[in-house]
Amino acid sequence: MTALSSTVSPARGPGGGSTGPVVSLEGVTRTFGKVTALDDVTLDLPEGQLVGMLGPNGAGKSTLLSLVAGLRRPTRGVVRLMGRDPRDPAARIALGTTPQETGLPATLKVREVIDFVAGHFPDPMPTGEVMTMFGLTELAGRQTGSLSGGQKRRLAVALSIVGRPRVVLLDEPTTGLDVDARRVLWEAVRAYHAGGATVVVTSHYLEEIEALAERVVVVDGGRILADDDLATILARVGSRSVRFQLPGHLRRRQRRRRRAARARGT
Image 1 (cartoon, rainbow, N blue to C red):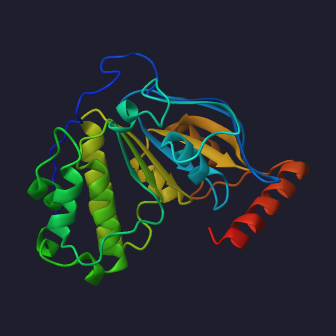
Image 2 (tube, helix red, strand yellow):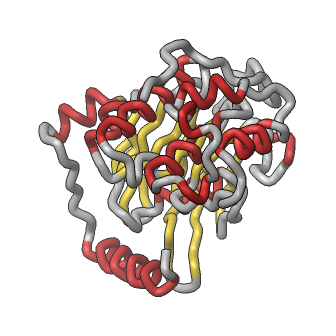
């Protein structure tokens, strides 16, 4: 597999040239019944950063991304994407996202799926360029239903950037990938970010965040426990893993949240 080494510039859209944050959460809380998934979170992401969001399963990372993507609404607080409500089509056109679980049309070929998604954007990347970037060229004529889990994952991430979005949300993008495929994806993400896009990558692996991120946001118990540049976070932990001790009431809340997530099958 090979990846494109040149940078790819995102399209200009709403908020172009603005000095304000492209993603903003202010006092955001999200509850699911008695479970608090996010608890009074405030976070600003300026244009052009590659942000790693680090935390264990059930920490609140996916919930946060779903609010930024406009898939859920906050229980309290305000979320802004490109200075707008995330459900505003003028903001959503600037967004690309790959959730943890992605459904692909099983009978369509890889090239056809990329062409279909590209057709929804005013200035998409050429299909051949996207396939080269993610090592998909040899799979162009394959139906997505015949792909391995790792191949589907690479395609899903490729679809998130084909429209040249200014903000890209990648929720644990390397799930199911082997070492070589993971490195191809990392290189592609870095190349796209180098063109000026804001990229948010969630993971519970410090190695992955270290390979990609400039800024690290550590999330657990629905709260932001640390937010700093990569070098500072690494100096603080001094190891390959990150552990934080939550106060007792937050540990109990986290256990309730994880039990509720398992009950929902998420």
